[in-house]
Length: 213
Ligand SMILES: O=P(O)(O)O[C@H]1O[C@H](CO)[C@@H](O)[C@H]1O
Ligand SMILES: Nc1nc2[nH]cnc2c(=O)[nH]1
Image (cartoon, rainbow, N blue to C red; front, side, top):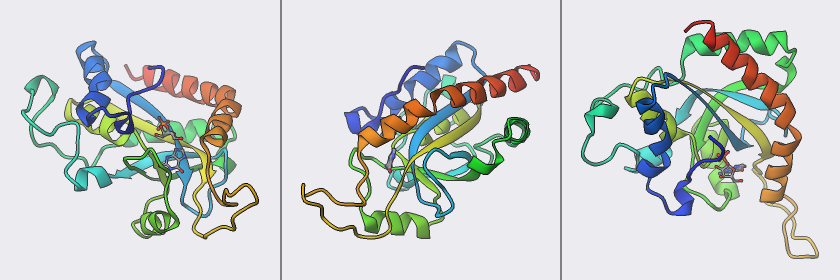
């Protein structure tokens, strides 16, 4: 997909996840999802990659999801597990690719969460997410992976850490912005700067997965 639907654009999560269900109807069996995300784990640096070992579904705990409402059994059962949301055998292949591409110094494994957005987090939000065991925060992916798992698609996802979320209140600068603020220009620039490296990374993953099929 080129881009995706986001909840903050006003779409319900069922529409945000609709492309995944379309993929299912087209016969897709693997989902590789990527996202731009803020780094919460103090070890992370801008430009690092976080392989998603898991996600923390804050919106789901608040009663929002792509599967709320009547269940369409073409897309899986009403109730389904999420303990193996991120496929361990794909992760193992990716771990090997990370070694082969000598990317170990910039690749981590962690927990992602999706918030509603579109504002970025307050310092209090960031501190709370860290205390909940979350390593990266964005505004997508979780509902896509939920829809994929419901219909049996195997998932791999990673975050590009485009900015570091601040745990400290900054000082206000002369133009009335704040020294620790994140801006979308920064997020987009890091994404652009990493485009070639990430394309090679994803191509390797597709190649490794396709050997299985
Ligand atoms: O998750 P993706 O779509 O990669 O983008 C992330 O970056 C944007 C905010 O900068 C939000 O859309 C957030 O979800
Ligand atoms: N919620 C959220 N989404 C992001 N997308 C890119 N960076 C961020 C961030 O810091 N927070």
